[in-house]
Amino acid sequence: MKRPAIFVLFVAALSVSAQPPENQKTVGLRNGRYWAAQTEGSKIDFVVGFSEALAATGFHAQSDWSEHFRGTETIGEAVRGLNQFYEDPANAAIPIEKALVVFARKLKGEPPEDSAALIAKLRGIFNAAAEGTPTEKEK
Image 1: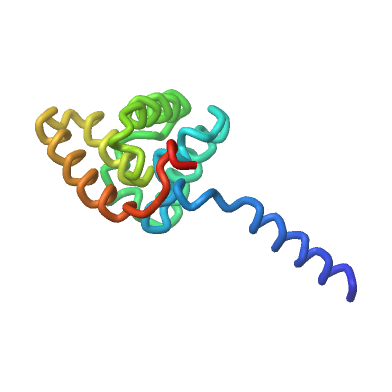
Image 2 (image 1 turned 90 degrees about the vertical axis):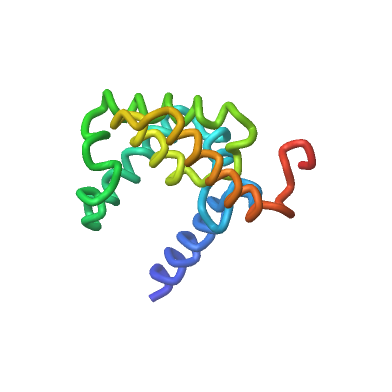
């Protein structure tokens, strides 16, 4: 009886310690600051997990994600694409899942002006939502 309680407390302690700082989330979703703090291996794991979650829930076939990210080659491309996307500090508050949509649309051949318009829209939405979140300089 005592072992299950200890196990539950151990798992609860791990989940609390695994929470990213508040500035690494926007509207509860992990953002570019979170991405930048991860190792390359963690980034690959994130993209694989995201892709598998979409597939498991049935959203994979309905998303911009559906034609891409099936092999390790495209997973690596996604990681490199996100690294490049988040090099621009103006994108830091955009959640990773939204940045992946931008990347998938670019892979599908979306015109650059359409991508730029989407990025501008996402910046407006998520930078406004993140106001009050400390910036990297304020930490």
